[in-house]
Length: 430
Ligand code: HAM
Image 1 (cartoon, protein in one colour):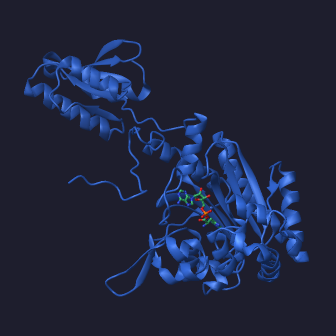
Image 2 (tube, rainbow, N blue to C red):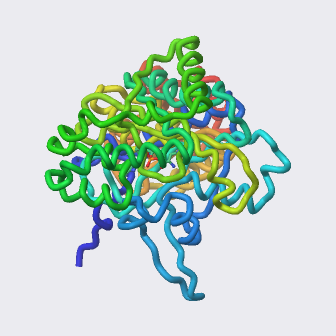
Image 3 (cartoon, protein in one colour):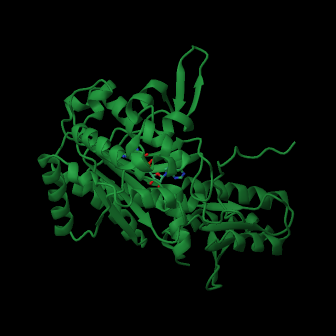
């Protein structure tokens, strides 16, 4: 029996695999670090929520008629007869946790970030998986359009500072009232051509008409080309907010385009919505997305607290970097020193083991061979792992309590007391 990862789920390995060379733990951590540093500079604090949440939370927040809730959730009944769902996204869990722990009352303006795994039973393809990781932020307690600009600017500068060029698409979906009026107008416009719409389009017409706009079907796009735009149905207040956001983005030199067809796949959005699209990524070009959800906290049982945020897809970010040939700034995983033993005397091996542990205790990354390799092959292994220094111990050295320290790049070599080699390694000088 040969087991494999579940469909459209993947392993993140320490070495590039033939299938997914872009997916390595070092790259993964580099992106996480980049994100963490950026959002912490802007005053965001980390929240971690469980993988599992009550199913009802997602039905209520994301909406029963959405693709995610109607057909993509990993849901099961636990041994205590509770319906639980593996989180498909991070916003509703953050809202649930803040209500549960009274964070909204104690911190009227709350800026949170998270890095977490999400699960959606999607039809998999490159860039679309059943388990994916999001890097996200949520801001609670501010309706000011300047905070919308901050959130959008953070998402954009995350990519631009990595060297990924991308486009920012924005729209406003207004208030519930605006959307109700628009929904009627859109349905009235589409109705005469309903029979020509794709099956999916016809289904959306019935259950979630705004989602008709989010299509790649050419026939549907042709029918919808002349449809009224949501923007024309915005209240004065929503229009003003949207205009203010555009003014702020212009002031901070973030280019954007208004996209009338941009409606997101969740029912909780109100006002600003946005998506960041990358180039050369094929159909799955959404690198990140988000928006405002001013009614969500109340919907989930909390007070009337405004909110907005975004989620960035880790895998899509790594794919975008790969397509551009950019390697993120990764941590050095090579050891500083690799201990090599000459001869097969047990005293030599014991001296090596002793030194290895004293180096590590002193905070120096060190390693040695455990496969009984001959002298030459130990050097090969040391080169393969990219060590900076070789430490060579033979019978003479073991007897005297010394070692030979050799700089791999310069070839320079000196004898040191085993006791003082840590200091030499720390300064990096022979
Ligand atoms: P979302 O647009 O569903 O939004 O996901 C955010 C990003 O996660 C997407 O733009 C994409 O890069 C990535 N993503 C989503 N699904 C997959 C998948 N199946 N495979 C690979 N990557 C994927 C949200 O989830 C919202 N919670 C974002 C948000 C936060 N809105 C407000 N606050």
